[in-house]
Image 1 (tube, one colour):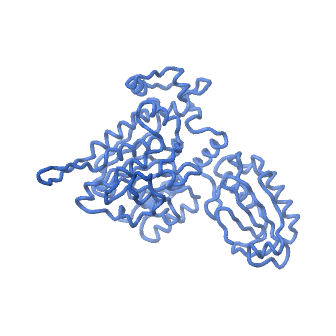
Image 2 (cartoon, rainbow, N blue to C red):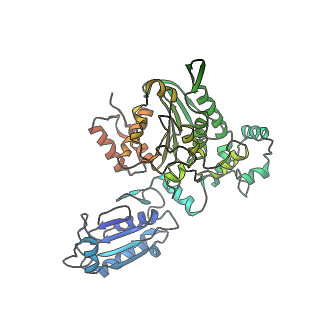
Length: 468
């Protein structure tokens, strides 16, 4: 037996046990074995009953909300130890502490509160502090609310752009409609959805065009402002202007092909707006290169959703109220068909879209079809580099599906972001990969030692850039 997301070994019942209990309760539950060293060898605890009592008391006194009902402790018999570990301790006993996943997340150290220093989660075989975004997710999950429904903390909002959209669709937007749609709550207070759709929306998208296939030369950059729906229209206009048409003369005809299928481009932008985690500090952007467009969106897969379910059209929307507004305005026709339509638009092509997911980032890359026709399939888009995941609806050609980030892919994601942004900080790595401070530091230092990155600056202003 080895340590993993659901299993932890402790040689002795130290104060760290409480952190492990919190992490299991905040994630998917697990089992803590006391009296087992890190290698999985049972060494035993001399007074198992006293140790069990001390641990239970510590859980009761140190964790909030109360997590004692989630925990069950018992001493393993020698036969059980042999079945689990291959042998039994020479003296004492092994205590098994089973922790269920909690329903009142986040669980935290009572003396610290629900801040990263007091909230812990499991990351593979390790326990790490939860970042603010993860804590907010747990709070909303426990309260059965979403970011859209939370109070915006703003009273003076205007909706000129939204009113024009409703007017064009021949729809009313009065106080009653604002409450029905969720722009205001029952008390008449503006919600985050209202803030997102207002002219004062603080959630921006960034658009950048580069010369060539890397980030060395920026052709132009634009940071969008205003209602997210206004920003959506601006993004579509920006990308359509750069969606060049190339002609192929096949006598007696001239066949014109756009660099990106119109359906794929539009669906990519719609997905970016509808499924963004607006509570995350991750930069949301579209980057245009000669051979591709990269869409980087805050928010990984919704909790409990598999990648193959998303690519097959399963609808799990992070912002259902925003999606409803867009549906009423005729901007979307059906929920959950974005990715399937994108893959369908590339059916029969030699280069396919690529989807990559980390804990807090969703990245979609669309290959430039005209570039592929003239220069061949880029190395990054070769089918052999993809990991098939389930596929797409039967009506579509079976294409290599998206891949989910694995431990080795963390380096790929970090290097990709550095190449897109020019640099990255340790804090950004923590947020994007959803790892602890020490894990982010080790990953970056490893890349420095391998000669892939170099450290620029010192202290809090330090960052990591590509080695020229």
